[in-house]
Amino acid sequence: MLASAVVWIFFTLAALLFYRLCTGRLQTRGLLSASPASGIAPERVQALVVTVGTAASYAASALHSTAPTLSSLPDVPAFLVNATLASQVLYLAGKLVRTRPSGDQ
Picture 1 (tube, helix red, strand yellow):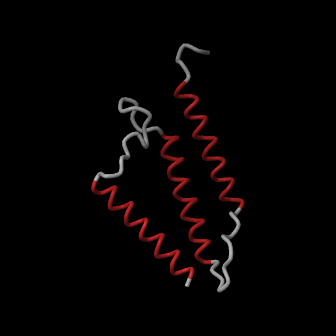
Picture 2 (cartoon, rainbow, N blue to C red):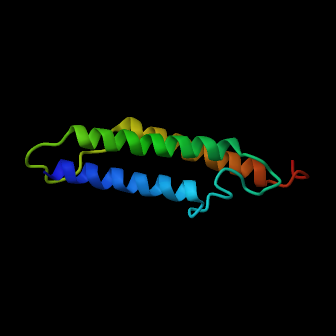
Picture 3 (tube, helix red, strand yellow):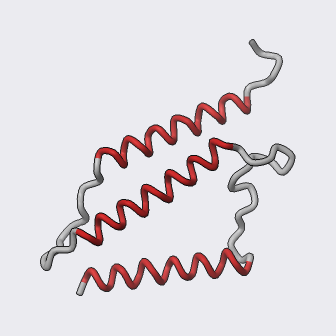
């Protein structure tokens, strides 16, 4: 019962997100670039991909571990924590490199 409700809520939110993305009601300008002139920043792309992948992986593991008496969410696997940590370190390193003035050595 609880698992089907969670699945229903998840897919409803995903459909709403998809609808708003398609109709332009969800602003995504600047999601992958720091400024319109700078183009797409690779560190932002990898951070987005890892974040979405991590969330999807955790959601899938939570849905597969549905016991009849589910009273809490499952623990987050160590590899997901490590992947998120590495992604954020790469993001911050890329941001640091891009925002450092070019005259500094």
